[in-house]
Image (cartoon, rainbow, N blue to C red; front, side):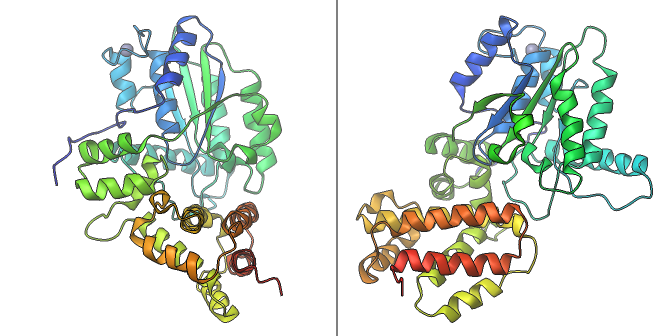
Length: 390
Ligand SMILES: [Zn+2]
């Protein structure tokens, strides 16, 4: 294992070159939209891109291809220490502190802690273990900060990460309205960048006030190079994680082993494999037992499991179409091929089962009981995959 350079602050930016050139050009012509929505799959670098836009906005001598990277403002931005670049994100709901002011303070403290952690750990897997939301108190704090304005002659940028988390909570209307007021009329020299991997969950009123920009995944080659050169992963591990990651550096990081243990998303991948296996089994008891092995609450944390299950279903489809080289979970290629041959598999089954997963994903956003949700999903997948419509 080669030792990666010690980093503090933002990781280097990769990919999205065309988009960056377009943004730099728009900025040079003073036409950079004031409210942007960066959307695309989780872990592909949307927040990193938002930071790059922030750096572009504060850079003293931006170039045609982007910020100079050398001026004082750029260096502060790269260390996530620039006083006019503000980063807001979903956080766990604070414990009640008795008053609104105290709760807002607690959220501000949690936000600063979160940024310090991000600075110390530039490469973090896209993996969530707790429920987070864009709390109303966070939006109140943001509005207070916007109201103060930038320093003399300064420009400021607000990054609101995972903006869809605004709707998945109580008091969401109040939080949404507060954010809306800021989006409607950003003060002079102020830019706002929202990021979202599920833009469909954003309120229409919010989405309609943004200029949406879609970010695509990073190539397997870029991911591999990042994992080897910047993260210090072993070549074979880097290749495997890059292949399975679907263009997402956050996913790739979660698939790498850490501290001798399988990475958190590797655990999820194996869990999703067991779900698929249960769905294919004849016995309803096996499916029920698998569904009951999950906790009875916290359906919103199932998103990663669904993403991994989708990869398995696409692989099963590839095995059915005898295109073994398209299988991403290469370690299970013989098993997948055997399933496709023996079941016998309905050729359009996997794509219909993918539709079932999509439905489950939407239900999970509404926070239903995971055991019921998975029982229903496994039954529906079984029916589609086995074509057992009796
Ligand atoms: Zn600069």
